[in-house]
Length: 283
Ligand code: SPM
Image (cartoon, rainbow, N blue to C red):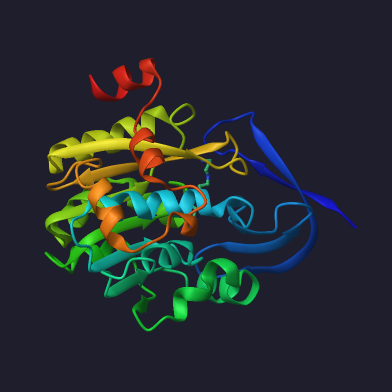
């Protein structure tokens, strides 16, 4: 019998979202957080961590394609990628679309996220067992700090800045990520909703400005997140987001049909924000 899952927005008091669910496929508490997987009425399977919707099969591609493909197509030759968080495997799947990528290091603090998603949402997690993927069940902040000058791309595929992910929204972590990148490396991070969380985003952009020559914010639509959209920081040591994308896509051998959301055009336009937000973030 159908029931409603409700997400109460911790950082926006008085706002909530509801999704109708038909079955609870998994529910447990790990050392780090509460984990749940649901079958929904019309949005496929859904992963929920600490009562916050992380992804549904309906629109997870929008989030994962955009957090991964934008830095990957902005880089001249991405070979070694670090994903911090991302235990659901959606970002791993996206990185492996690139033949140039030789190694993906998935640093997820909670192994149970990976296990549950492999079992219940294989459309998203199935590529985690690929031989190019190396799983490290460790603290991502410590991992970045201990691996200087190592990665072409770092993707911080985190939950919200409450609970285990809080440290991933603080300056020392961004400094470690900058140092863990090679000299032309790119960092993309989950960076919330530009209308609901402008204060958090401005703080992240201020970290970026101190550490990187290129510091930008872009976004995409995810209807199943309260607010309907989510954004990302794009911090680059050398190349701008739109400098190489046409050439890189043309030469990648990847077909446009492999993406539901990402395209060269969408990549470029995702950085365009409303006028007031542009002034607020960049002036
Ligand atoms: N691999 C997918 C992980 C998704 N992580 C981001 C989840 C953000 C959910 N909340 C967004 C809106 C409320 N702050």
